[in-house]
Length: 403
Image (tube, rainbow, N blue to C red; front, side):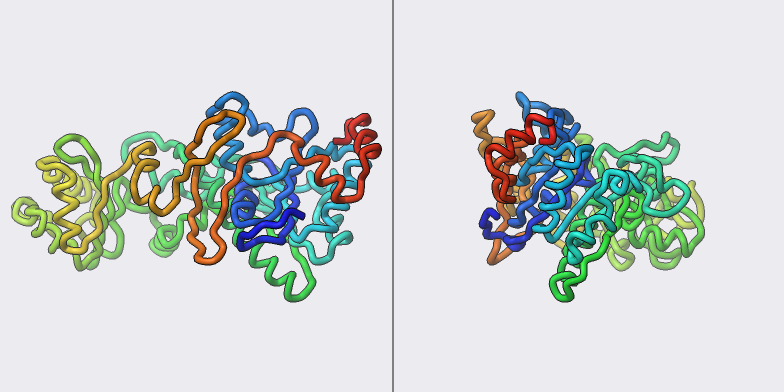
C-alpha cells in the first residue's frame, strides 16, 4: 500500500462507484491520504470520464470527482475478476457502491457477500430514493433529490416555473454525508472489529440539507415564504434576501429580528419605509401582498447606491452583508484562494495548470493533498502485483478481458 501522510493515511478503500454522489466521498478520502481503488469497466470505464468540460481527454466532471484515486479495471461478470475484487476486499476497510438497490447482490458484491470475506468491512451504499419505500428500485439523479426533498420549492421565485438548480446540491450533499457516515462506522469497526452497512440516498440527503427550514414548514404545516427568506414569527421576524444596486449588481443581507429596524436606520431606509407603513417586517407573514410591498420597497432603496456602499454601512455595524458572486467571481474571490478553497494543480498530460477545488478543511498537522484523476486501468499492474499476481497471470487476465 502506498504510504501517504494525510489524516486517513493507511486506510484502503474499494469503490465500485460512478457518477457524483457515489464518487465524492472517496475523492474526499483520497484528499486526506486514503488509498482509494476505483473499480471500472474494462475498455470504457466510468461514463463520467466524458462528462463536463473536456480539455483533450481530461474531463472537468471526472477530474473533480475522482482525483487522487487509483483505477483498476475489472469485468465483474467474470469469476476471475470477482476473485480479484474479493481479494481486494480482504485488504480493505471500506467498500462503496451506488448501484440501484439489488444490483450489487446480483453481481456478487452485496453487503452479505462481502461481510463473509471481511467481517470488519464498512460497506457504503448510495441510492436515489433510499433502500426502502415505493420508489426504492428506481434509478434517480440529482434532479430527483432536489425535486422530492423540497429544495426546488425553497429556491423558487414566485410567479415563475420551478427549476432544478444548476449546482448538484443533492449529489454533493449525499457525497459529504456518506463520507461522514462511513468514517463514523470506521471508528466503530476499528474499536470492535465489527463492520456494518451504511446507506444514504439523494432524496434523504437533500431533505437533510433543508435543515430547520423544513422543520419550520412541518411545524407550521405550510410552505416557506419564497422570493426571500423571511422567517421567525409574526412578532419576531428576520430576513435574508438579495437586492440589486444602482448598477444592477446584487448583494445579500441577513438580518435577525433585533437588527431589522437598526439596519433600516443605518441604511437611511427607515423614514421611507415608515411612510409606507412597512417598518414591521412581520407584516410579511400576513399576506403575499405585504411581503411583496416590503421587498419591492427595499429593492427601490438599494438601487440608489453601489453595493459596496451598502455593504460597508452594514459591516461597520457588525451586520451581515456580502456581494453576490457569479461562479467565476467566486473562483477568484480572495477568501477562496487564501484559504486554499481554490487551488491550481499542474496536469502533465495537458502541460498546464488547472484550477481545481482545494479542500474545505484546514488540518494543522495533516494537510490534505489533492491529486489527479487516473487514466483508465492505470494501476492494474501495481494493484494486481500487490495481491500476488505475476506478469504471466496478469497477461492471462488481459487475454480473457477480465481486466
